[in-house]
Image (cartoon, rainbow over all chains, first blue to last red; front, side, top):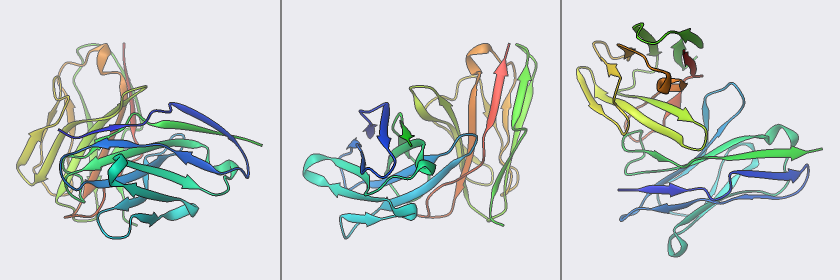
Length: 114
Length: 111
């Protein structure tokens, strides 16, 4: 069975600083990997996804993530954080690109200090 | 506008009183799913449906029922709610290999 670990429960960064959120997955085959963001009172919005090909994936809102098979990681990065990026971020792994058999991590809460 | 609509957004009820949370999508998606979100546990899948009249259990199905009589609707039914079902619930849908679209959530409190 697949699993996802997000080791950081809370992260605080200053506005304008760089950001990296960690995600480690466990899955026997090539995974489908996702990052979602949840703003307060909202549903989850897809930031980016990796299915195959280039291991550096660009997403919306200036986010990117890098798939590293040797480390079983799919870390999310942003070069300069904005106050509006404060939210909860979820990494997920799936056996397909769609919703079936999608496993979520426990989330990382991002706080941005002005 | 393409969307997944859940109702109600907030619900407070008492133990044992049957309730239904509705979910509707307007994207002709085949796949629909219910998740519950609890602090420190992330999102856990309750039930999912691959198409009309096809449903299956997720990771935490106990105490819940679903039905999929129409493609666009996937209601979540709690026949006898208990306090441990107090949670934030999300409905989501997708088509083929497209990623999940989520509703805005239903916050349920069972006293």
